Length: 363
Length: 210
Image (cartoon, rainbow over all chains, first blue to last red; front, side, top):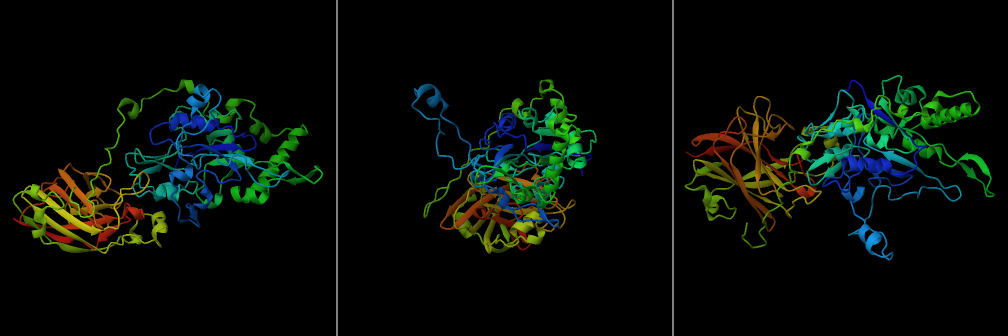
């Protein structure tokens, strides 16, 4: 058990799907070899298939406390990494060359079904949902690893994979119900979001949070009664874990999206929510309805001039109020050279094996 | 089984070396490592209803030249699987008790460790690991090891070589004594890895000829 738990609240009413968080994470953590198709932070369109594709149908997690069968996602389910033909399209094509991927046509990727959503015009709807590892209180991945390579840090509850002990067995990928663990085929290790722990250790917000132009992400310790996380999760009870039925007790929470109104045939608003409550309940559980009502009440109180601590917290006029104790500026980070920076990258020996063909004798 | 004393181990390093035809082969019965013995509920949940470790038997032979021991294994495998980028490779391992009388299936205990010499089809080398129980394996004492492997007409054949001399984390094998040997095989095309494997029912007695 951890002594305290670092957590994140993501306000879905403010996310504009710009993927700045995705890129902040990518450039910070997954620009290495074998990480081309790896996105520790993704922003997908909901309703949608998500990343990896149809991850909500892949099982894992617990039911009644019992471990559940799960599918191990393939890289193709996440989407392969690909490069675009920037050089030809932007500099050499004289305007005749379209921007397109180099090599094989990609079949899937993060937010592949962008803005598709659901519903019929004019009552179609969608919203964005950023996802990272949930650093669960009861991590299925940790329980599934026969090597004991996954641990939950006592000091902050961040779930980490020890690559010295990971053998790339990938039972964790099947067990994680959020399918937030990738496999690096070059190093032979499972890899995932580390909640920017070197930043957190130095009081700096995660890259995805700090870079977010929409000020969508709140950070802090769940137990810190003065922090935004405790307020939003435990006091105002408007921040909910994704798929609580997976029973891993995720520590990334979401402010559910308020819905635009439906229009009738003549284009008049009907007062009905366009996003079906049943759909939101399928994501956030039965508490989502009451949570939305509390948000609406807070908004009404604010509009009526009564004031609302909930709205003030959600609006967070002071940028740094988003980040609880993690308000240090990234430029203050003391950079520690990693082993990879100090030592030459170790590349596994080339894969060589000689097969004897039928009737052959060579080794 | 007996590890026959021969004059030069180099003559037996190849899987197809003629000398192996003169060495008695023992058929070792293999069974799936029980699902109840898998180390956690997730692995059990995923494999309870899924066949694995279906190899019924393998053939084992052994020789030594007073310095190095060779073990030759041959087992049926529909196709060779190296695992590629995302899969899992075919594999095999032999096990020796380092001291005491550890239970093979539980991979030793804190006081009675087991040495494994493991081969995987995507690597042209083997590695020695030591285990003090399920899931505890780490690289063991350096023991000079090498392997040759080949797949042909539905069978893998591999020859694993290791020095007789051992250490605190590798079994010491002495000519003129009896020890025990265990076996495991992984079918990579069925995603078999770690405890999801075929194992020998128990240790086989191994006599190392003087």
